[in-house]
Amino acid sequence: MTKQHSTGPVAVITGASSGIGAATARALAKHGYRLALLARRVERLEELAGELGEAAVAIAADVTDRDSMVAAADQVKHDLGGADLLVNNAGVMLLGPFGTEQRNEARQMVEVNLLGAMTATEVFLDQLRDGGGDLVNISSVAGRTARAGNAAYAATKWGMNGWSEALRQELQPDIRVTVIEPGAVATELTNHITDPAAKHGAEQLYEQLAITSDDVADVIAFAVTRPRRMTLNEVLLRPTNQPG
Image (cartoon, rainbow, N blue to C red; front, side):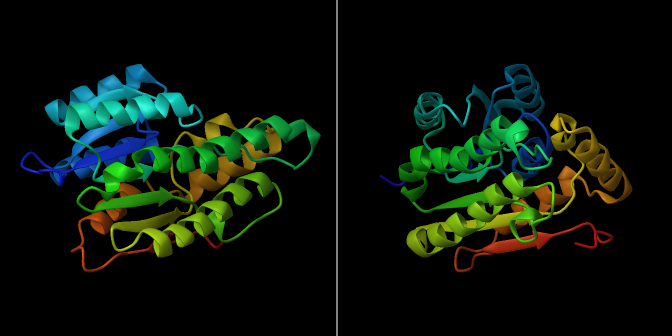
């Protein structure tokens, strides 16, 4: 059965408690979307949902836990009628030299950044197909340009880009697929880097030239509000002063 949109289409956003996820929720709310806000930090989600009003629902979910994502999908279906848009935003960036000391962080990035997006897409896929939907995957400029010190992170983002391109060919025209590749964005990502040298370098770079989460959110909102006869499949955006 095709979903009815009398009260606005439904957007599901993972990693919605801060950064690009929270900014995207605000941007989409302005376009009449109802929001399912997914993340682990429930207090932040509830604060954002309170800010956005009745159009937003906070749902505790972890993209690395399939059972919690299935429960989230069931709640979206029950409370909101199903998803029209999924934004795979949840991610971590734990930079540092590749080696044994970073093995747990490398695994965490793969599980959150890539496998988490795959899990979220899998459990919401039928809802997106119902009436035609949009899938937006948040990648990175690191999905195009790998550097020393970001090997595992770049691997997850190159994987996201390849996976997104395959889905474009597989799912369109029923589901439009867009991959967004931002450069340096002022978010909490750098706060979680444990390698001192990598953390210092990233913080310096971001302090000098990072764009805002709102900048990226505006691009996402623009992409998904285009007429369905067209798709912005891949959007690379950098701070104007970022060289690579």
